[in-house]
Length: 279
Image (cartoon, rainbow, N blue to C red; front, side, top):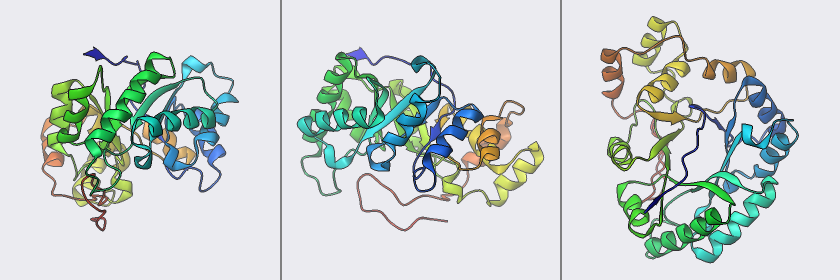
């Protein structure tokens, strides 16, 4: 099995989910100014055109930034995925995506054909990769049994699995399987969509290190070997989220964070309907 092309990507990316609700173009421009060079979008976010337009007008060379997008669950299957890839490239205004992910493994929790659809989707992605339309292939919200379907049928191995990951919700089984398979884990919601930022353990540790609780969460992800994708509309917080080089979380404190009870889970799960978020 061929290994998908490994990109030398930044250790922290910028998540663009809901970035188009306000002035999405301004948010992306400010993220560029803050220093972000990896931008995570998706067809579901309805902002691929905004992300592509701002990057095209940035004056940066195409090789100096990275764009990741995702195939939505309603587009699973060979033909649908081919069309979805073409639409995303058109909206982004790009000849190629640096990264393309399958957003969710199932079209719905009761999808009995999900394995067949995944195999077809991956075939379409591999063809796009061979045609130079995608550089790196991956998945999102895949648990080990979903990953197995891809690994069993793939000619090109997935390089990325993007999952909900933050203090209080580590998905350790998936994390360990990705490590075993050499798959990079990316963290959407690395701060639990702000639900964990008031947790007493985290706020106390952040104070001890002289950093914000958000910075502590992001550093925790990095020290766990996970690439965080924070999002913010505040230029100050954007810059703060990149300024993580001045401290290291001690081993004892890492263990305390890893031992946190389930906190801040979004309620999203690939095999069942969404449940109310846990605070």
